[in-house]
Length: 170
Image 1: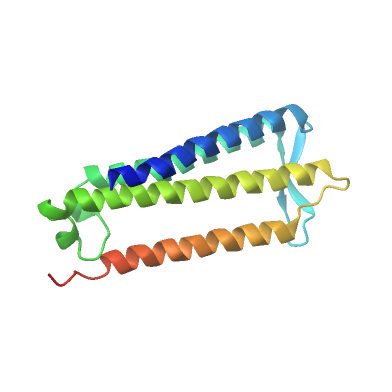
Image 2: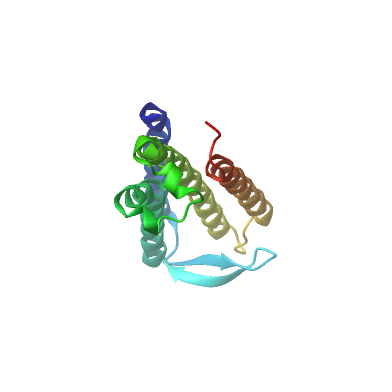
């Protein structure tokens, strides 16, 4: 299973590079005050300075790293009693523990990739909204991106539930 993690890890590195290049480009082209929050119709109603927006982008990147790579390491390090997982005694038994941790490392890496890709896309939409006069968010693209991400989360969640929700009959 460890080899299964190479692809999401490589993809995450590529996404970090894309996000960095996007942020660098954004930093050079946005005005000093940026629209960052938008109402239902796409009109801006929240603003930040350019430096605050860039700091937020870095914080969100840190969140993606924590979700994708930190959480499975935390799960591996904490006592099993603190893990919220159905049938955890079975799944964290010594003969299955490494396989269970490997599963979490792979799937959280994929989740981190999906979360980072979603945030890069939303950041792009915010950038595009700030290039328009008057400033306006493409709510259609935002809704499609949000729906796509939520479908991924639903599938991801079902995969975990189906895998760990019951003990296999041996």
